[in-house]
Image (cartoon, rainbow, N blue to C red; front, side):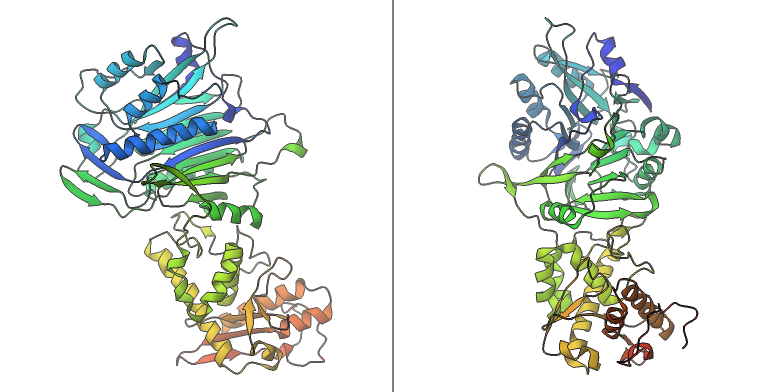
Length: 583
């Protein structure tokens, strides 16, 4: 895999290098329009393309109309998706990008001979450039078409539309060797920026290009760069793909972003007349390392409503925001991957903000904006039993508060008083497998993700019934007439509120824990309550209103009662972890 500068390719063709809005390292935001299409695909020795030609023509045609309407700075589609006839019609009809914009469109497969014909037919409207491969080859290529405007050579010259085509360099490792036997491989990828007076770079990888990826390539492209990874991938969490992200995000600095764009969930593919349902996740995501990332609840919840869900990728110390798995158009406003010569007071790289999500309306024949995306939580909320009405009330206001409430209800918090921050909250943290444990984003079908969600919700259901049916300690007697779930940044270690407005911390540890672990959990939360209190009286009151239940080996629900907080006249101003404290 060779990396070639776009500026050099354009120079060889007597064309000027464009200044792209997305790659100017200033404080201005830029916009990204991405299509995650519905997958009804046919594949044969002749290539890979959309099976329903009429539907694809309508959907992708309207998508490019929307790109023109919004004047998005960067427009993206995944591998094997854009019909060439739709793209050709847009270019010849003067519906392509204007100066400063870049379209990076994964196109349906084609053959070099067909690409030659298209180059001739588009000659009056655009200059088509691609790596020279065998024109006589009967194999197809998996192409990415960059479309942009090359500025005029002089004041009286003319700007020229350019179609720069990059080919996939490595076949997918499927058991039938479909691409190995039928796909012509390219040898290079193109890099925007760098030598054109712009400090930011942009490169694209086409799905299995990552099989040839290594540390040397990562070093060449990662710094101050936006890396696009377009895919038609039944397993976006395959080790090779995870490793590629790990190499890029594992480099020093915080100016690396990766935008992975796959097809939607549940792709259906016909190969040789045999229909296969992949039952895949989408896995499209935006990864970034910005230190100034906007992790405020108001921002993350606004993204959530639209269909962009936050996680923290712990091994890479990176933010990973996953797209809703359903077919959709996503319109983002994003900060640049790096700011250069920008005043510190103006430089805040917030990350992507999802401003619009559109779904296809077949009756109307166009993309229709949706104010709220289906995050899948409604399908699992019943696991919380009689607590579901309360859970729904909170999730409608703030999904992240539900994640925190459920973590507290289960006693599953880290030994860190900031456990509730999104980069520490256990359901928001993902490991190198990228299996998503989010409760309120419930589209991940992996067994481990399902098991986690169900266990967390059922623990909450059990706690609800315990409070309703068990004898409560005197300090919590006001919960008996009724209570509600509540979480706030002012009282982060408390999860319920009585009808009289008094807060408390209630936990059901479930089974599988010995008394030592239960005691440690109680001690940690008591310590957090103590440290977050304004005075001794508030500390004691909060600790008295902390209560933990667990299930012992016989199956009985046992209350854990700490003697430290029982006496109403006790004035303990020390942490439960004070080594000088008397037992």
